[in-house]
Image 1 (tube, rainbow, N blue to C red):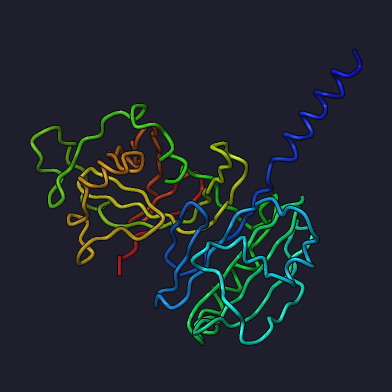
Image 2: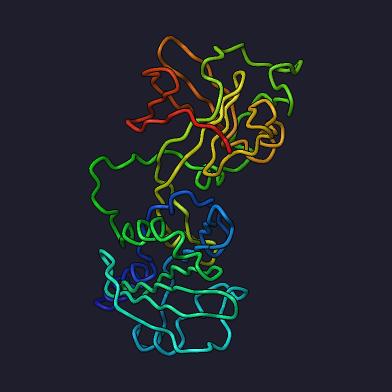
Length: 318
């Protein structure tokens, strides 16, 4: 009879051991952000520097420090981004990351690229921040890179004077099955309000335009189809309003000439219904409906929104 408690304790311990710690960081300021199945990817404004953040994965056998000095843990980097034979040995130094068991930063060159790779060890797992660009690109973006690396933490996010709340995000919202999302009025690409069926009620023109605020988003990691961890990224979130329609994203929406009416509303509704919907203004409040969500915002003044304490301000798409 005593075998069963031990057996179930073993199963519980095994399940706990499979849980990977979360990695928290701020997106590098001014960089365009994206993602893939393997990493969160951020590109410098000039396109000459890329930052790839890989979530925690099991380290496997061997000592973290020894393996990093021997292989730079390149096996944890996407195959197409792994370095070849180095012309000179990497320079490796310790690096402090809050909540980590250990971390080390390597600097090296590979072909025509300058590389920096930060490896973070925690709970028998490793996360990688891989930075690669043309010579001089890292120095030109030193401020944004430093702020991002300084923001890294494992487990809990670093304390902030005014931490941004967790708002709904494209990555999480997009996971809702299409059948669960109600139909959203489909605007046309050039003039969404002019569609014959079904159109939203006209809204005040003062709100129209692009707004930006700061929010936290989860980029989950799946192992064998099961979520086992992920990364929490703090960075800009964009809201685009036009004639009763709204779209939410973490990248600047593509609008020729910065004109909201020229955003491809029909494509956004078709391919990203969880983050595209309608809005209406009632007094000093704004109600947005996207996918299965209804979000209420305050309108404290011209060119400003307030959602759960996060301020969004009107901006201009470049």
